[in-house]
Figure 1 (cartoon, rainbow, N blue to C red):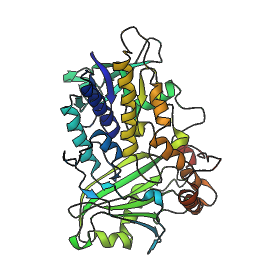
Figure 2 (figure 1 turned 180 degrees about the vertical axis):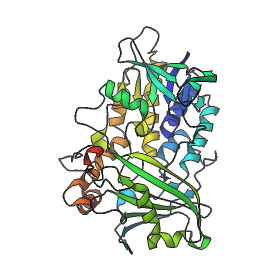
Figure 3 (figure 1 turned 90 degrees about the vertical axis):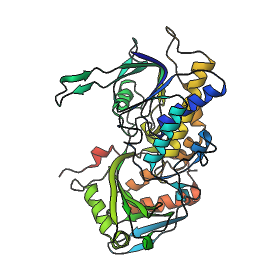
Length: 432
């Protein structure tokens, strides 16, 4: 068993932002706080995949001098385009204001996270990569969280011990922050056990598939961003494509498909191949080569799917909580901001108020939930709350486009009603 003040599950943007903030607060007051981050990826950043075009606000909060420190944000976003694809053509659409990327950076999020990991270690955070959290340790009351147990190492394919077997370690903390990303394995059980979601409330998801290409220099426009709607998806399927021109003749492109599609024969991977074969995209890729590829799930439920963010002994941060802004297709800034808010609340409880000592009740981070409700994250999610569900009317994608345009350009969420998600994703699929 190892004892810490704060145990953080997941070494992505949210988990590392929380760890860094805790250590910065302690250093400022010359106090001590022990923080550990466990990350299942072989190294920090190994399991991080995103578009990614990120807003820098929360990074600036942590490191106002991030440019001088060499953070790998090298390509500013310089131009935005929106296209509606038919089978053969690309028609320009008005650009929604909330999708403007002025001041943002096109990055490899994996590299940004690696850099955050290095900064966290410099501040004294213990980071255990290649270490998955396999179960949650609950207190005697069965409802308070006391830490996690890491996975057993050195087991064969049937989970039987080999000669190199080492059992998992108990990592106990006064607080445990779950930053597992979208649909985290421990978080799923935690939300169910502690009833952090109200009856009838559920998360909805998307699947993003992405490739990074090196293209011919003549076709490369550093800082150019294009989002697409329409082809290859039909009017009943939510989703869209993205093409981001990074530095060094690299282009990041992908397709996101909402997992609430009806067609049982639809394959997001095959749809992505059709997207690349569209003349608008294939012309860019001709003569280039693929450097890397990957896929990931996205949380798309927004405000209507938010669980309760804290519980006795811990809190949910980042994509685990479901903080992605779907119309913006951005979640990194909200993930980092939530990590900062949770860290502020955790530091106050543990260091300033001395909570969480042996025999004392488990810490409840009520301050975190309050700070979240008053934060830029909540304001942002509230403003766009009706956009994603608006694609579920009988008008399909067309109805969604019309409502989204009206809502984002003029109404800005200032309406006295909230659309609800129709059904969980799996219930939307029609039988084959």
